[in-house]
Image (cartoon, rainbow, N blue to C red; front, side, top):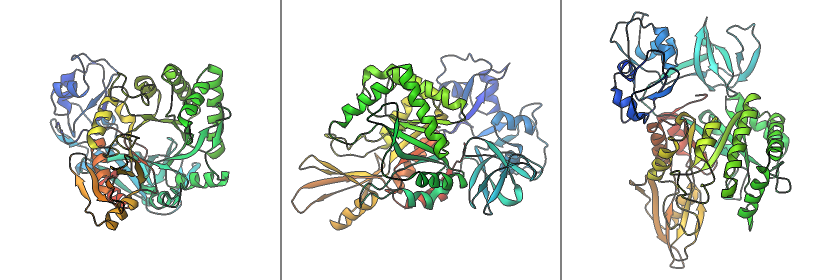
Length: 508
């Protein structure tokens, strides 16, 4: 059944003898529905081709077995049985089966032992904390096969975990949380937010490393912290099946910093030798702290360095993937192939996006940059426009929409704006006795006030409702999920919303 309100697609690989018609029949949709969703120019397809199927049911075909169907849908027989309430393996032609979009197991005891095979005689891979979530990908002899934070597979006893299967009742989303050190009294460290909510954060990006301004092939710590501090965060994450990434950036945060940051990148990408040296230092960083991969955050680049930047990402991905590491990158928002913004124009979405395991598209700041005027940091319309372009350039299942949890206080009199966290925005509304309204068009909370000097202000920020709207939009557009910049500044209601209204996918 074709569902316009649910665009999380099935990923289907064309088999020999398949046609758009035969594929459509299996999912009770029209051939034109498949063609249009994939933006195919004709009905011609080839064996091995990856296509997306916007459907929620599978229709049993002649000679189908549950095993065949599970393989086609990239799920398990156990998941199909549970979701559809099947009491036997008997099927009939034309029978409609709900498609399991995500299956998980949740540890119901502490220190659950994850083994390399379905028996206690196999090597222990990891101990998981109680309430840890793992994607379930198979089962055998009283054991579940699960996917781990490092993309390896392990086994846990069925008796020690709860098994859940999800269809379309709730949006399914990965959550990448960005972690920073304290930035001042009103901008706390992300530590407490992460520790308290780690079972809703499948991926964590530690914004703690920077390209060394003194040597563009090297990496320096961004802030004052010990090696043990980082290793402890990684350990906490791994015990809850969180993929922990080293976020490495080029931001200098000082006068003239944008130009210097561009020069830094220009030097780093300039030759195969400089790129190779930097990539080798990334590998040393990942090994030192036991990271699962890297999340590059290069934001200021000369347009002349565009091709070499793409080469860097391609070389980085080849080298790290051979070593078993995950490769993610944060990319400035683009809306077309045409020049749009000097900030994002150097980033070739097609080349970079297809080299990565994960592309984190930074939707901020639609408003909030100097001279922008008042408005939301990320409106729902802006998100749809940027992600709509993005998924034409790279696999949608690798795309993460990065959204803010902060906002801005726009001084309409002076033309200046200041950063506000959720708590700061709410306290301002209370101080000036202003009602917070939810702007339906942009799906963002806002209010206006006049300060003691008689200066007029507009405040736009993010709350639980606006973040939920962005998760819904990500789900409808069939992408992997959202990233939150940054932990520690958010509306605390977000975490209850994620627990009760969203299926947070670990390992998908």
